[in-house]
Length: 40
Image (cartoon, rainbow, N blue to C red):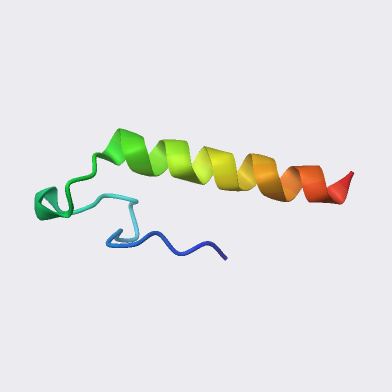
């Protein structure tokens, strides 16, 4: 489980958060990469 600050179930964030959906996807991809490296 990886919480996304200000994100909803569709990984969208409010405009007032100052982040874009692309920012959230980049963060999620990096979290997955970091996690998968721990498996090896």
